[in-house]
Length: 112
Image (tube, rainbow, N blue to C red; front, side):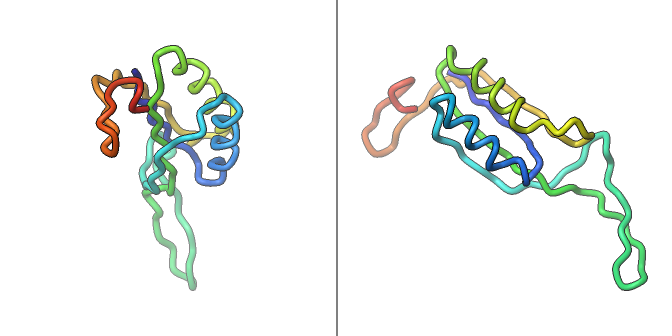
């Protein structure tokens, strides 16, 4: 099993969700996050005062999949989230040692 963590631009969330659903993966966990990478942030002017916005709003999408579903899920996220601009995000893939469905006690792939 794999845990896929994707950090994407907020306005790309619906496209990523739709792309995953088309791939047969209609489940995810979502968190609103802030961060920065190479883009570092930018300056804005509010009521005549300039200030630096260091952390950019992003969405963190987590999805647990079987090993053979990882490549299609990654490709779906990559295509849906891409704008071609700096700050498009990252995808991390982590080996998932175990999963347990709390309600039934199912483990492993059955718990996904």
